[in-house]
Image (cartoon, rainbow, N blue to C red):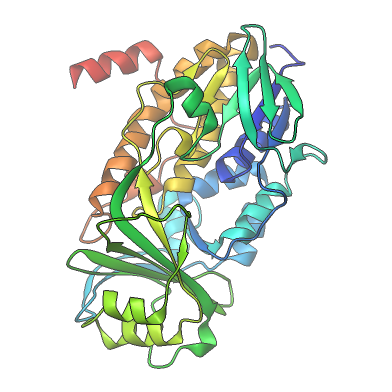
Length: 387
């Protein structure tokens, strides 16, 4: 294996940081280039399911996350109008026994900060908005908006749904607006009156839903995110302010517990839910994509970040398997071992049926990206043709 290979990770989100940490842990020179001017703790929550926690274990922050996050005792699916429990699965200690790791809900900013803290000093570069890149065959030249340039042997595009690297591979194309928006709010649980929250639940009725959970070990803060149809999103911004009145209108007639949750809301925003059709290629030459750059999905399985993190782990595993000097073989192996799973999660997320009624989540939560047997690119292609 070439020891002085330089890997540039474009995008300092959760998938990009996972890739950089695992590469550095393997002794590989990985640098992260993030367009934001500094690290921002976004006010949002996130699920870290057991399949993702297994990657955190290897990254060295499993225990820190368990100390910070909420470990819900169960997941509950409820009828939005009556409050009736439609389905539930035990989590907590049972999740650890059944799936091999914890199921946590945490502040996204805390999670992001812990991952950032695992990287070697001086290897994360902020204010680096990629404007162009060129694969010369021998290396990749990256040009940034601030006028600087860098050179790398391999470039990992972890730069999200509007990936500049995806655009380089496949040409410019706008992401698809799915016709749904997500309202998001996080606030002190002390403000709740008349609402006895499950530790983690999803309420459904008709064409909309709301997911509610705590984001810290002491359950001081509560977070919710919705899925609500909206035929058009004409704003150029990635999000807009919303309001309690808009929430009341969206969830009129819903259970009194949901009305009290809305009453306690301090600030709420709304975000368009975007996706793309499955991409024909994930790599070309020295460029390779992961996460939302190649398979963006609705958040309805709470697995978007999880798939990016699994991608990162599998990509590093395949680079080690094939050797850094055989990057194209590694990229083929990576896609062969990720595309089917990522596409399945993308499809189920779009359907918005996950855990609504009785089903076994083991195929998702029990997965271990480090232990699953590798499938050759040829075998995966033959399997795809057979289907």
